[in-house]
Image 1 (cartoon, rainbow, N blue to C red):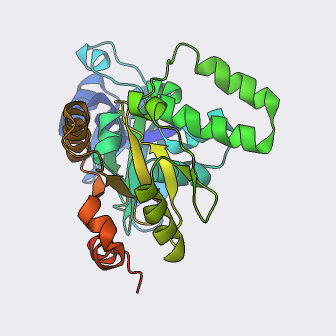
Image 2: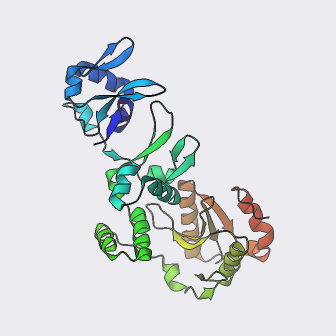
Length: 299
């Protein structure tokens, strides 16, 4: 069983720590002794424990399934951490955090992991450790059924050839119907690039080959890990940068789709490089400058 500090527990209940401390005093579970919070006999019976931090001293923790006979309990949103999620998918917590980072849900910070706009959209909540001050993120239980997360492990299962896991993950993903953008069905990916990708236009061949020549790892037509259905033309894991090539001029349906995609990138505060036909004509002049804006240097 995992234990949470009183402040972390307050975060789960989405109330201020002060309100929770007052409630615990009213219930007779804690009391103030020598300017410190101490557990009462009743608090210990409820599962409270004293833990020690070498730097900050003793503090009280509670079992994660602690319950109250009050309105506070009704406010509780069950949240889980990276360790809980990693156990479900049989990976280490460190590997899981890297996957969440790759999805664009969290970012590495000198003070820990911080939540992104996409992470907030899927239900993540940002917290801070009581004593270390490091940031961490907790997730709602339904994150275990998130299609973008399931897709990652399904892809890894296929690559590893582990069919038993594949069936398990597939069963979790039942009922998730993937939509395909009509333009992806209309235009075949028949143009081969230097690195073996098959793309849908000669302009995309130029972009892909240029990224390859720059030594930048990139994915083609990667699904963006958001609730809405969105595929990006190119994705650069280094820097988490998306690249869209707008190449169909003034065709009405295309312009409508373009505006919608631009709105989604803005909504989730994603890093986006936009290219048009003029950029393609002198890509070596334009693309490095656009990449540099996101800290990616190619010369």
